[in-house]
Length: 251
Ligand SMILES: [Zn+2]
Image (cartoon, rainbow, N blue to C red; front, side):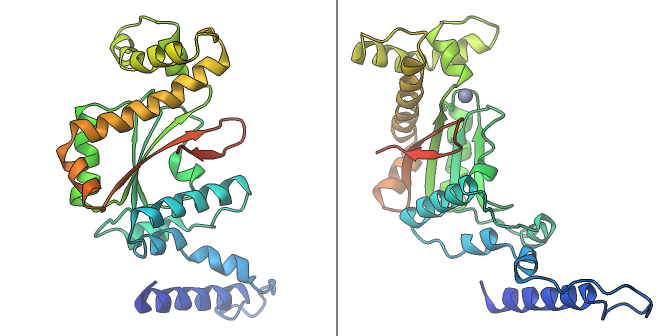
């Protein structure tokens, strides 16, 4: 956090404490209210936004996401003041990571990684696959805006993966699910003992599909491949468990 931000936080905290204590109120009959707690005063801070500026490497970016997920599953997320974060980011953004995640309503990346406004780019599409639009978005996030990490995140109980395993045909969804078929074939070959309608099989496909997306990003984008080669960017896979909220980083 730079010095001007520190002063802003200190000023806001001071004003808040004065008003909470009734000292900023002109009506003497106002009821006294309890002193603001240290924890409550911290809610004026935007630690996630300020931390973004201090992340200089892909490893630090991954650590920041993992720490955020830890806060989330511990039930101790930062008390972010979103309007304050809006003010801090009104003229610029410097997100430290880009996350490619499934459309699934149970996996809002900013929440499960406890990040604030301006901290992460998020691209969401059913089955967390890549296409030219996703790749172009990630090239903007990394080459133009210097995000240091691309996390492709699949999840357990993925409807798109289940649909691919069952070879579902439906409107435009058909061509989307076709893009998951390479992962289905790979898992069928590796685990012939598993049936395609089993949870074990489908979760293996979800994980394999993450690896395919990572490989495709590297293969299809010379911009991304060059940043990785230069050590400015890392591509990492993850699996989100819809039962626990935990993200497991794939090795
Ligand atoms: Zn899904």
